[in-house]
Amino acid sequence: MSQPILQLKNLIKTYPNGTQALKGVSFDVKKGEFLVIIGLSGSGKSTLLRCINRLHDPTSGQILFNGEDIAQAHGKEVLSIRTRIAMIFQHFNLIPRHTVISNVLMGRLGNMGTLGSIFGFFSKTDKDNALKYLNLVGIGEKAKMRADNLSGGQQQRVAIARALTQNPEILLADEPVASLDPATCHTVMDYLQKVNRELGITIIANLHFLSLVRQYATRVIALKGGEIVYEGDPKNIDDAWFEKIYGAGAKEVHIN
Ligand SMILES: Nc1ncnc2c1ncn2[C@@H]1O[C@H](COP(=O)(O)OP(=O)(O)O)[C@@H](O)[C@H]1O
Ligand SMILES: [Mg+2]
Image 1 (spheres, rainbow, N blue to C red):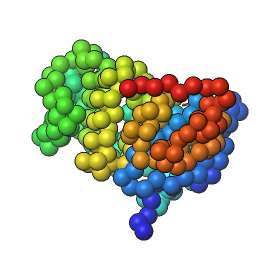
Image 2 (image 1 turned 180 degrees about the horizontal axis):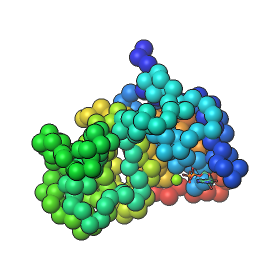
Image 3 (image 1 turned 180 degrees about the vertical axis):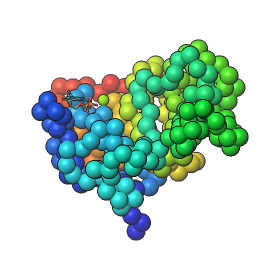
Image 4 (image 1 turned 90 degrees about the vertical axis):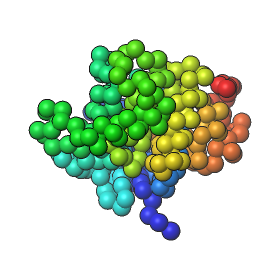
């Protein structure tokens, strides 16, 4: 059996104000999985992803990335971790007035030397790759447009292309479709699935809707109050399980 790409061991995150966002979370992720994290707002999903790519400092516990503990990494190591573990966000985080292609090239900055990044010297390979990834998410023809002239779904696809230029091993997605309408939601999820299947990139996504979880996840973990309350196959999600996560009387919202 090959080593898991990621192993969390008793991960704890207590914010400086005393909020215990993660109370000892442990799980493994195999290479190539499309793992989905679900849970109510405030259950710790964003904190979890932000600890994994070290946007946040975990309070204690281990995060083994290919066997190496990155939980307490600092300085340059953290920058290297963030290129290998890329992230996309609910609000896309593009630079609105820049072109699509320059937004995508921004993904390369973490891999470049200081001088190159100050002057924006991108190699021909970088530019070719940026276009290749824009084509992969179906918007190569929008390369020269301003990012803020794109629809929400298209902007999220630019963010995916930007993340791919980092050559990541893991892609973290924090509620990637929460700002999109249902139809667009599926388009973006389909591209994430393509990235997972065709490029073999491991995906960990925070999602709200169980119907999307069933459709796209290869495995699901549910968080409640900073603890794991369920881990398993999305096919086994049933009413009892749903109540445990969302409380008695909660109704499943369908999005098709
Ligand atoms: N920067 C912060 N400082 C203090 N508390 C925070 C911070 N970020 C999140 N929290 C708290 O941590 C808990 C988990 O939040 P979060 O990880 O954002 O959950 P989710 O993404 O599932 O909505 C919540 O109680 C939230 O209020
Ligand atoms: Mg969140």
